[in-house]
Length: 176
Image (tube, rainbow, N blue to C red; front, side, top):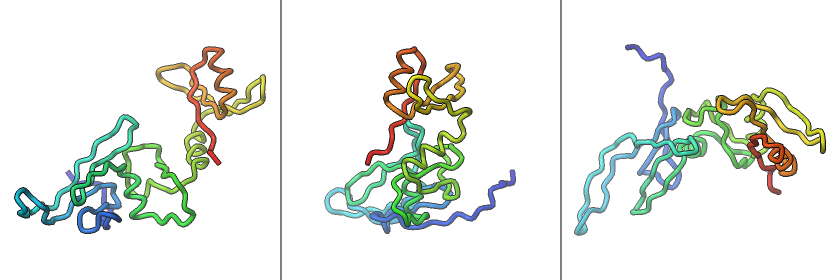
């Protein structure tokens, strides 16, 4: 079957793993051909291969990278963004533009602040509401499991909604 994906895959070295691993613009990681220490002081050849990715409970893809006997578990979207997307404003988080945490293609990722990330999440929600008691904002989102899920932006409103036995997903404010 003919693939509709015509985007060329570009590979670049991963900082701290140069000569060991590369990331691609399509969200894949590969281990490079190299020699590693084996038992009794000998060396063995490791062939180039695509690294297997796992999906964590939080929905993000991750893998384990090894360098000189040290293993590190990394999120793939963070590696791809660090390798391919300049972070000129030193933003701390990476947003998946299409909301799909497993789509780690470089054209689906962007550097954002925590506030920008939260706004991106909330902008697809249905309606912004205000609490009658305190005037603080919250969003209502339709959920397949629960009729309405209220997304609170403030601890006080989250507590008030919980007292009314309404399911709440609390989103913390930026820490300054």
